[in-house]
Image (tube, rainbow, N blue to C red; front, side, top):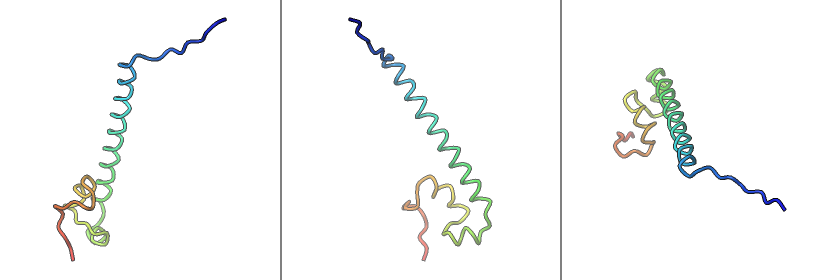
Length: 75
C-alpha cells in the first residue's frame, strides 16, 4: 500500500518567509502612519485645537499614543 508523505519546508525557509511578512507589515504600518501625519498636518490650527492637538504634537501622539506622559496637559 502507498503511504503519502507530507513534505515540510525547511525551517530556515519558513523563518525567512515569516521575517519578510513581518517586515512588509512594518513598512505598511509606517507608510500609513506617515500618510496620517501628513493629512493631519494639512489641517488648520482651529480644527486641530478642536480634536485636542497642536501642530507640534501630531507626530508624537500618533507614534507614542494619546496617553504619552511627556505631552503637555490641557485644561
